[in-house]
Length: 267
Image (cartoon, rainbow, N blue to C red; front, side):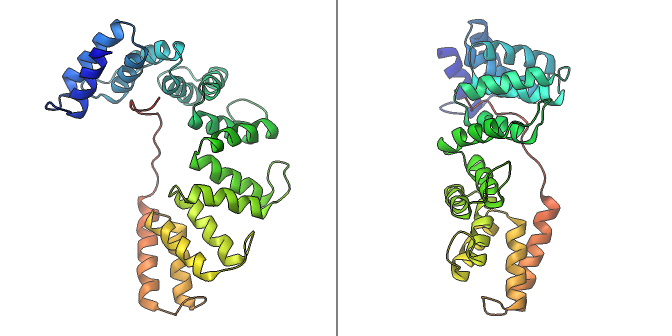
C-alpha cells in the first residue's frame, strides 16, 4: 500500500514534483507485491503510455490479475476490450462475464452497460427486457445519471414492453438533470414545454434548455435558436437566435469522443 501511495503522489504531484516514469515504476513494485489495485492502475498506464511505452498485451495481463481479485475497474476494462477486440481476440461471452462480475460487485457503470446490452440484445446475447431494466434500476438507485436518464427514456416512450408513464419519466429526468447531465436537462425542458408528465411551463422549459445548453447540449442550443427566432414563449430576438444557432453548429462539429476504459482513479 505504501508503494502504491508513493506512486499516486508522483503521478499527481502531491507533495513532490510529478514524475510519471517514477510513478509507473513504483506501481510495478506494488504490483509485484500482489497489490490488486496496483495491477489495475499499472494496466491503465500501460494501455495509455503514461510514464512508459504503450504495451497492450501487458495491460491485459495486469487487468486480468486485478480482475481476478475483484477490482471492478479492471473487470469493466477487460469487458470493454473483449467486446471490441482491442488488444485481445473479440469474445462476447468473456465480455458479458466481466461486465457481469463488475456489475454484481456493485459497479454502477457496469450495471448500466449490462442493462443496455440486455435491452438491446447486444454483445452476442438475446434481448431480455426484464433483466435489462433491472440492471438499469440498480445503477439508477446508486445515483448514476446515465441510468436514470435511460430509464426516463424507457418510461417516456414505453419501450421494451413497458407502458408509457410520462410522470415516472419526468421523475427520472429530474434526478439525472440535477447531476448536470445535459441530455436529461434537455428532455426535462421538452417535458415542461410540451406538458408531458408535468403541467406545461415555457418558463421552466427555457430554464432547463439553457442549463442543457450551458452543459454542451447541441439540441438545447438548437431549440433556443428556434424559440428566439419564432418568438414563441419568449420575446422574439434574431440576435439571440443567431448566437444560439452558431453555438449549436460549433457544438455539433466538435462532438464525438467517449472514453473507452475507466481510468486508474476508478474502482
